[in-house]
Image 1 (cartoon, rainbow, N blue to C red):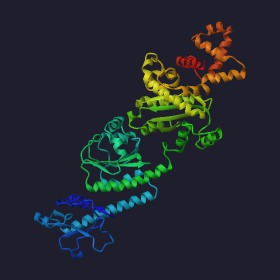
Image 2 (image 1 turned 90 degrees about the horizontal axis):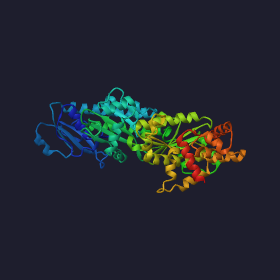
Image 3 (image 1 turned 120 degrees about the vertical axis):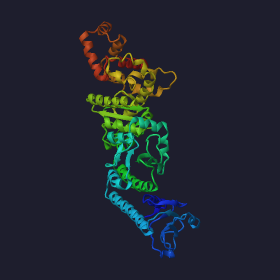
Image 4 (image 1 turned 60 degrees about the horizontal axis):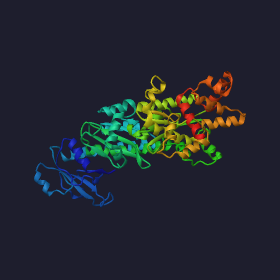
Length: 521
């Protein structure tokens, strides 16, 4: 095992030895030391360090020699080679060499022990616990969602951010926002080396050492050491040994299972893009990933993830609150598929409420599509959810007085339903939504379902609904207009409600249906 030369100066300093001259190339490597005077005819009173600088090697009979001389005369520095070390101490040279060699041997044993643990299938927490004695500082490991993976169990954190991380399982939103504002996330995307801050940084008021772990070339996890004193060369060297083992553990974990990187994500991405052709192929892929092809489906899209740091973090929090939904990350948005049996609307209501509440707590915006009865319509539902998100963010403030005293009041600024904001989409003269509207009118929208039911039963419920909406829901006026008995009208309206799967007493639903009637005619 090779060590950098600067670990020698650090080790000697910890022994109370004053360093008069440090090596000129502290990153040159060595693997052992000796104070035997007859080693390669070296003079007595020196510690001999064979150095492997890329030209010489461990198999060479005459490696490059670096000496550690214990003389009090600074003038001796003139006779030293660039990488020789001059120290001032009263300790015998043999004792110094023995202490250095013992320290190196401890590192070798620790590194070998970690390698054995990794081979035995350990987890990252085991590695951090094994490293406490060597590092002597708090170490925390988080993923790209700023959520807990592991931390040193017996060495508590020094700073408030790390303390919150340990207690809550994720970093505080304030720290994540500061991280984003200062561009640290972009810096981590390009960080391929260990970075040490000898002074407090923008987030943590203590010296730190950090290492970014990447997956598929992108920032995926973060190993962080926080110390009361500036990190030494030994600390950084030991930290790198730990980071290499932690990376191995994480890659093994990612290969096994990651809720944000499962097979259904790739299937749903293809489905949202319309790349699944034919009912048989769709059914085969859906069955493979445990997703039904018929029932009740709804798509929700969460935007403004930058407010909480990243889409990964937002998706992780959404999954924690509602693990039954299927999650996909597209660009800067998180797409969620909710599915249930056709007659289990209450389950979708519950899932929807959980997602809305999480969005409200995290101060992000979420758009929700109407519910569809077939998985094949997921791409259309995704477009509807995106339109709801777009127009809801523009016009939600208009509904503040209308929602006062209703359950929707808490979500007016964060959760936007397609049926409320569809009229803005349909009548926006500055946007081109003709293709989407054409698809909507030709597929399973409420009026299309009602029209199909009329055709099969030879009924006229579509005209009853049109009259009901035109007369602002006044049942007596509908009876007079259509010359129908009141009980018959009420009976037909209940049938209509079941077919369109909507509450006709909801003003947003009525406006949505009026707009559909307008477009269909």
